[in-house]
Image (tube, rainbow, N blue to C red):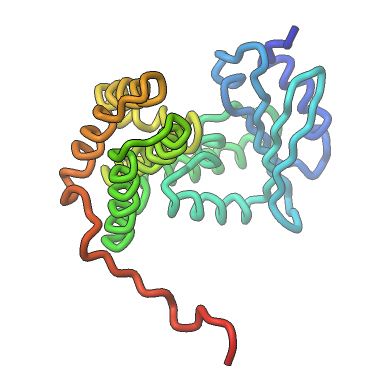
Length: 246
């Protein structure tokens, strides 16, 4: 039977790393820090060192529990916070801002939390017009494919991609933070619970009953505020140096 990791269990496991003298701050994140972990939940933690040659992500197993470690120093944290902000996915900033301190200097912990919260409060950058158009094109192209008679396998493949592209566009175009995997569904819920329920039902109909009609209607609903579907008139030249030879 899988162990349900608790804060106490996580703290004990993480001491393998947090007792190292060069760790200056450590944050327990995810479901364990929130107190809603279940059997099979991971332990997620951000460990901050004085200095590292490079940021590292490591996966370990202790007591049958998966331990995901994000190893940083203050400079690599700042780099990834900005890189994540540009992508609209502030996962690392959330881990620090909302994480539970388990080791380190209280003053530094407070400062890192302040910096992480400032990233979250600032929000993601606005989608550039060119990216808005290219995303609408990709979604419109998938919808056009889905509208044609397809095998269940083809519908599944198209639908899986369309859910990600449509949900991510909808959240980002609205100026909100997005996410990956289950984080994308959570981002939709934060943006608009009714819309998130519509996504769930529409794609449920597609995946369970091979009925694309609600998904196609959802595409039009989500794209309408930004000019609707877009395919004809699209033109994106490749850079001139994308060639082999002289």
